[in-house]
Image (cartoon, rainbow, N blue to C red):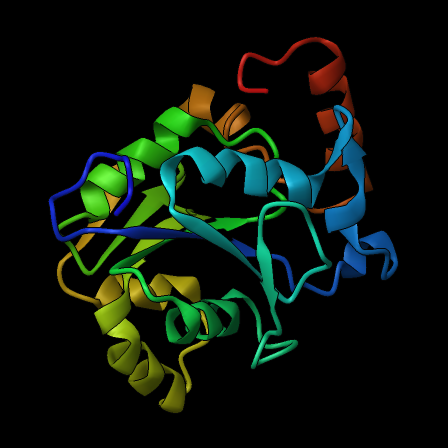
Length: 202
């Protein structure tokens, strides 16, 4: 069982989605980029570790503290990675994080756990309505997600069709810090600056 806000029948596996193509980095594996003395991938694993019983990396490189699971749907986006994870975990819930959110905070992840403990899924929503790749999904929702996939669903937003799906609303400060997304060289450069200047979310 996990050590987090949950009920007695709830257990958590941390999942890092690391199988993206990094096209905006010219094919360089951005999860291996260094930031504050660790790779982006290692930062994600280290953040999930205190609140989950084990951690999986979907489609990424070997890393300390996690087991790598090959992505069964390579090139199909994060929903394919999520499906791979739901088929691989033994816990009741998956706590899922993209490797390119280097400043994600433990407090935000705990909010996701609280929202998702008795829900099919819990998602984090930016102030502008976008969803962050930080969420929880219950393992027994795997058949429903497979059904969505078979009907052509490929967007993480399709998970909102799971019931109940709860939202964790992020304010503007959280979006600029904990949800900072390293998706191209410019956002990576800004992340380096944030680390150098002791970003409160680091």
